[in-house]
Length: 448
Image 1 (tube, rainbow, N blue to C red):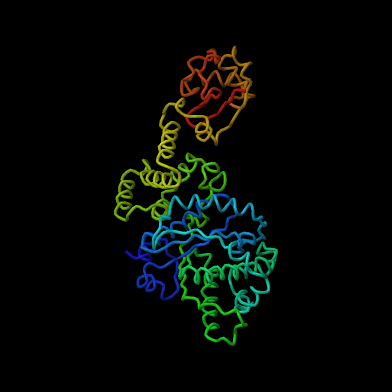
Image 2 (image 1 turned 135 degrees about the horizontal axis):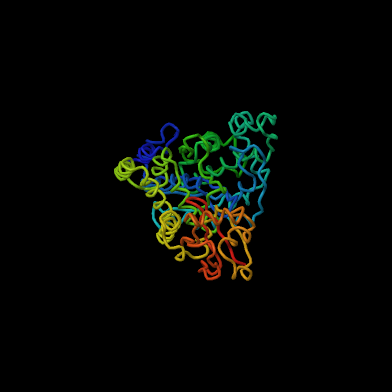
């Protein structure tokens, strides 16, 4: 199956320049690249969809290049933005680049050979280019009219209140010219003939193909060149974009209620990462499993059929969450996440969880802190009402009534009597109690 055929059945293909399919078929292996701005030390779920374009490029027998924009990251891409981006210093960008490269190595094969992946940093070539030289050799080939016609610029250029924009600086306006030159450089040095990205990058990508075309025309005549500036003519260039990953309601995919879902376990734990995909809506899951996994079409159809027979079991979401969590983190991390989920929803042993996982599992519930030394002689009723500052029960009477009805558990053990002592309770991870009130209300009590 060709790259475009693969992306099409997965719902990932958006557009390509004329001739791209023929170029891919006739010139394997070709070299194609995608740019990533190192504005954080970790990529996120939205980036993962773009990474999968490189994965499929490599699986189709081509060479993927990930460009980490150390130079362009200092400026900021105006695409999809309504305000100027904060500028980062070189040290921060280098740190971020290292984190991003480590994540890319989980998805791409960097071994030697014609299809081995590469990571490059555009700061490495832009730092050698002077401002006047760039204007003379590159800037003159694109008109301001051409650059202003891009949607990403037009949305910002007006600076009116309705657009939510304060306009666009010359710095960000120049971004597409710098990204275009990235393509020129890779085209010449690596014979890179394809740039890919999400559909909102079409304007920036085609700036690169247009710049290569115009440089080709300019190189046909030495009269347009200053002495000593003539370069090897660029190769032909093509563009391909993937669909933006959105939810069924049209909102951008990649954020949870607590914020961005990162690929770095320190920023988004494996448990939270697993839960994010596990909680996917039935209407979204069929597309997500095609985009974020490498499962074949027959495998996905079989999972969907099983899910349709018993939707309440969430077979589709479980397959999606397990597959992606394993590739982003590890099989061990996935097993731990599944075990933690079973503890919360399936009645498993809370004592089996380490402190970090316990806090992840109950991250969304009220977290109360109480003094350990003062609770030893308390009975359950007083502890659940007065001692927790009425956060669990507003009064002793309500606490006593619910305990007598069998509606209160501590660490999954039913509280048998309102007068039972809480001093002898086992503390999870040495300092936590999980209180369950009714079927759905949880509280995490930390003893300090």
